[in-house]
Image (cartoon, rainbow, N blue to C red):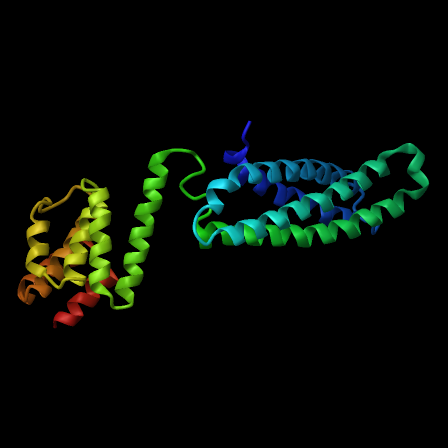
Length: 275
């Protein structure tokens, strides 16, 4: 049975359990807070079992992720740190089990000290595994959109990529590219209100076509039911009037909005520019 969909759950429990276990073991060897000794043993043993499952689930999940162009080195580095962490904590677990054997009572203190020292090395390795895992997810979108196996998730991943790439293109002054990307996004979500508004915003900001934006806004109710939608449509309508060379109409829209959205920075800034 593949454990790939459960990798994020395993990983987060492992991080919490093992870091807490190492901390408790370090406190316990000082002779303070007696409860930390038994607690450390439980946390470290359960956390090590979780580490074994985390490595197994990560191995099950890595195939589709590492086939993404450019992602394989990041996947391999994360895997190596994960396997290293598992191996270190298997040693820690062995020491914790050895300390529970009655015959080893005379060496128990030393075994616990060894567990603490090895555990600190394991904590460093665990941090590195987690840091590389975070990089894989947030810098390479590793696993994002494919973990559940739901095709809709992959579609949402593509939509998010189109949106963020469009914003970067606009920020860099590549307005034609931004407009093209927003157009692709709208093709994927033609009935989505947010996508439609984003396309209208692109008409204003990327194409400087206020009249086309006003024509597109005509399909929205004059007074939408949603307060958020009223604000979004109102701001776009004001910006479209400005882009179309009709500042007086923009002032009327903003004046109307100023009552409901008193103190709103976006409204106030636009009013100030039109004075």
